[in-house]
Length: 60
Image (cartoon, rainbow, N blue to C red; front, side, top):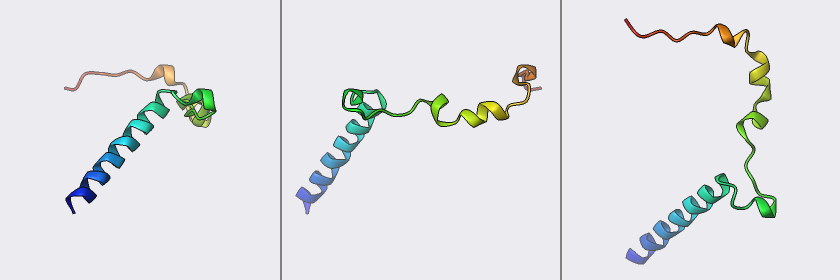
């Protein structure tokens, strides 16, 4: 039972390391790279109506 948990923890750590490496572009030489934010949702930029008018004000 103890070895089972150890294997599960090791697999989860390896999966997290693999995901981190993928997000950093470590696998881009093999064709595995994440899309940039601007490439995944270009329609959101088109939906913005005059975003330059947005002003942040301090809370009262």
